[in-house]
Length: 496
Image 1 (cartoon, rainbow, N blue to C red):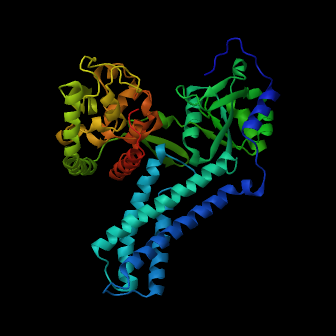
Image 2 (cartoon, rainbow, N blue to C red):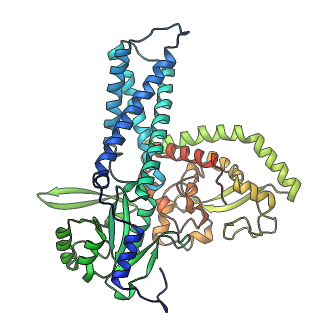
């Protein structure tokens, strides 16, 4: 939050003019009907992507030099329409056409994977029904790869177009945040991180007039995006009208608070949608199920637990993939060991006590990237200029090669491929109750925080990534994170 010391407070009119300059109002037909047009376009692109994948599959299996049965084109197209329709239905069923978003779009990838698996089964059934033949396993595997690749590429390209249009002010809900509170600032931050949701914050109002003119930053680290406090609740009528707000978020107490009654009336007058910060967001260890008793909603709180099937499947995936990765990386690991010995002597491996699931301690293995006289337990280096890091260590950290020995931790069961990063005991000892909830999951080699832009900052100060993972974990979500990690690695983004 900006400092209020010796600052000039602009007038309300000047603040509103500033907001309108930063977030201009679009009143064209395209802007008004953007949501409907973009949704219809996305559905059409998804449908055509599945058709294109099936046409490519048919072409690969019906080459002129192939000595096999050729399917009639009309039956292939009928199969394509049926499979495409079912795929679009699955995407809608899993919420991929709703105006929402998830951290780093991981949940979207997971739901596409889920839809892909069901569509593969649908293809097998429809091919048998329409073409009177059961597809081979190789055909179904190729279909799954084609479908996932085509849909992901198409959606990535379309999101880029949407982001470009959003940057020009089209298709956005103009959001006013009511309450310069930690919850309000958190909502602002999430809107900035989730451009697909189509929510653009234009200002904050607060009951404290002394905050007028202050700029609130979405991140205390980067300070890239800021939002002005444009006035108080008493000035809400003019603010809603001048800024053409379409949605207001109540972030200064429960929505049942009597102080919001005038707000509801003004929102009705200006046709502004009302949202609020749900208290459930704080119930990380629990899920809430509602029972409707003739209009009386009873919330039942249940603890979030891993299912036995999930634990078994996740462990099997860890063992198989970690073994393969270890075998493939053995030559690289041998070269790294020799390079460390040559440049800074022995040992090449560095073992450090970390805190794992449910607070259990274990020895984490890494290639040594710091000088031998560096303190074993100290804050992790955050940039390349840290004097504790060796020249070779800078390369290893940037390329994430120093993490390879943790494959041994995975095989031993201390860690998983996907999960929160394990912290050192002296840091965990200072955890708040919310930060303690990171320990509900087994620590991982990769995870949401590890592939985010916030990986340059403290893990425990960016717990949203880990809490999101804990609340939504599944085998397919793990696969989605591994796929994003592969893209992250190809781009060459490492610890620094």
